[in-house]
Length: 428
Image (cartoon, rainbow, N blue to C red):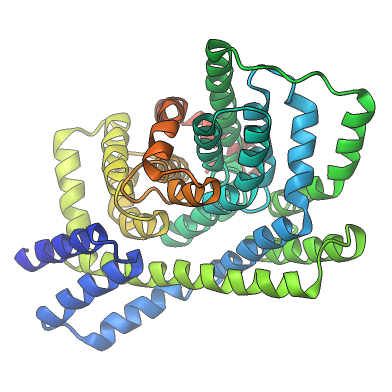
């Protein structure tokens, strides 16, 4: 037990010192393995086995699709459409920001991709329209968390693989919660806009709106191809990711003519870099989780929680507090890989649906992306907008209120997440 505690302390120390997450996880696990006399070969096998899953093939293709969409101009067309439709409302570009994130969520599935790609366009447009930098950064950061909830979603794929839950059901379960997040954020934007008396844009002419719709039709077909193909059983998630890449290349090169081989190569290189980082985290987190399992930490957590209460809502709230605490310090993919095997047995024991758990689990971790010290979305937006990190933290605080409110609604009302998958696939 002392060695296990030492491993956790070393992990936290390395993260505090700024070491990459996969280095912190891998090194702390390796120190434990060597110190405890365990087999190094078994450790390597565990890491390799953590990557030995067919659905993980979808990860690089969804990442590549996101990069190609940014390079093809899909992002700008989506933003222009959202601006034409809702830019005239109080806090107009704030609503546009959220609406564009909802659409882009059906294409990339990653909060950081949304923040880094669409976020750059959104913040520039809001600053040019006279919005203060803090509001622009805050709403952009908060809206980027919608991406991993609305399908496709990289965190959902990772959770589905680890929890051995249908990824199709998980994708379907994210639809309503993602839209609910958008509505809640729009309510906050409206309240801030009215309170600060933001200037409103004029309602655009009908021709402008129709042109924006026509320009965005092909990009809008992307989420229909991805989500519709998966839900209707035409594609597996992996095949849908490949279809999204092919569709984006064809439209970008031969219709929009904004994509060339140089941009494709740049997107491929960026994808390799991002994928390598993600899979290194998955592999090192798999070893860390294996050590916790060998030491029966999951059984200890289950016994501890169930000794306090067997009420599934109370258990879910305690699990969420644990996930929230871990999410402050550990990157999303690593947190899923480590925590899912620990909390899933407890959840199942009290009757919590694994699909429901997955959605609240991931939303909880999205909130972690907006909080220091890790806060990956905040770091990305600080770089994109050239805003001090501390200012980004202050700017996002008001938008944590609607996100936490949606999280609590999902905890107390599981039907919000389960209605669509039950409708499509039947009761789980």
